[in-house]
Length: 99
Image 1 (cartoon, rainbow, N blue to C red):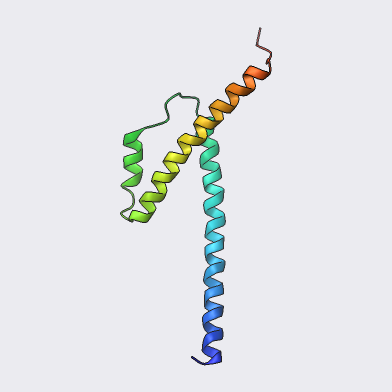
Image 2 (cartoon, rainbow, N blue to C red):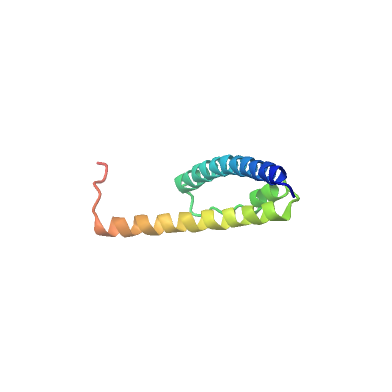
């Protein structure tokens, strides 16, 4: 491989990595928004198996499906953690109640 060919390959690779970084930034922003929405839900039960199945059916790519399964699982964990944290805070502090 010539030096010029290697240089073109490295430049192309750097360009692709730049594009991946831009996509990752968008994914992170969207996931943070998704988790904020999940945490704002005041229902006791978050699991909607039919909805999850509908979302998983949108892609046939098994890797993307696995990512969504992890998102569902971690959304539930985050919600449970938030509820546990809030319960602990309520025990330590007395919040004024509406009269």
